[in-house]
Image (cartoon, rainbow, N blue to C red; front, side, top):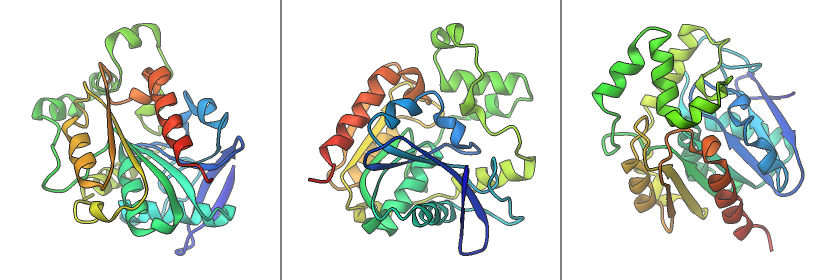
Length: 261
């Protein structure tokens, strides 16, 4: 584990591994670098991967202040600066996809190719999850945890993969830190900046994703100039893990198209 220092003095923990063109992997809300544990080896075979713990999670600092998607993007830039990486492929999933949108929109000089997975443009044009989904997630444990698992993975996959499931959130977070991540994600609205994204973009989503409705993928693909859309049949929110054999090669092939000549 290494640490980058941000402009406000916070330390952001990160890890690197593999070799090749650098690839920044951005996890979902309230999660650490462990979000990628199930698929990281796939990417390390072709890229120098960079994963991080968002502020408020894992081994990163936890300043007592509100968080924002734009702030998470600045933290990611601090990590790249610490590594001396000028340009990087960026793959963000769920809230990480929101962070990736801001990163690509505000720092086009740093992003070579962009992959937006199971994410949303946010704001008034985004498609919200249904009230039934919200009610299921609001139930106390263990019912709420089970509801989240079933939104992440299909029943068949869960029957043969009892866990641990690293996509369910960082267990070391306090309720206040979890709320700060939730608020940051809920306040995301990149609609106006999406047309300014210059990086080649791939949008990936499961077509059975109710946690972040699949319609958001279409909105993103239509809003980002030249974006390519791929929906994975039968996949839910954690498509990148359960449908690893499909999603991994899909993303790697796209990134290979945009390697330096």
